[in-house]
Image 1: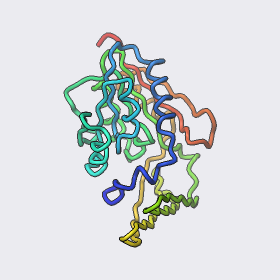
Image 2: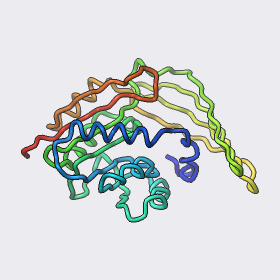
Image 3: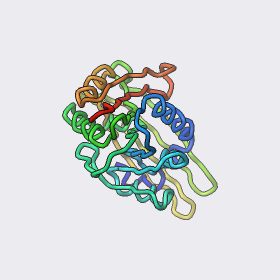
Image 4: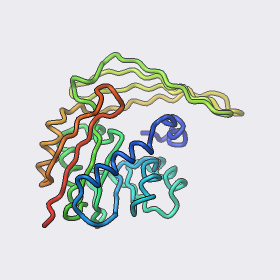
Length: 240
């Protein structure tokens, strides 16, 4: 995903409150974490917008499957360790005080086997007392097939129109996106992508995370229907 869109990604999501989200996840790390260090790994870090704020307080590193997205992150975060890797088989040979996976990225894991593998990898990279924090995708009853959306970004030289349409295939949601991208001197072009994300009940996610040996907690969203989709938190034993 995002092979053609990585250079536009930050503009597409320019209205997202990355700083506010980062403040919330830092508060959760301080509330639940029991380790004394300040090493933070962000899995599925994308273009590094959360890391941009996290690095103010932590020694950070990032992982993402998409090399085009990591190229954008490296422009933003010179000197930060950014690795191309799959969260299901992640093995950096290092441990961290916090492992985060934000912006519903665990939803892209389409099977429970994939979720188990990723959660085991998160646990494997935690120091004793460290904390794993994930933001899930929607539960099955929250997804609305047939929903349509339209978003517009524009600046002096670039216009991006994104139209989305939701469908469901078994336990997975599919968001069909059509992008119309206009750039000064280049005209318009059309890009189509389908984002497929697994619909999993929070209770099941908590159970799968807890099976790794982490103490799992589910924190529901503050306001149903808001962009806050809740938080899945797992704490490693202090003696390992």
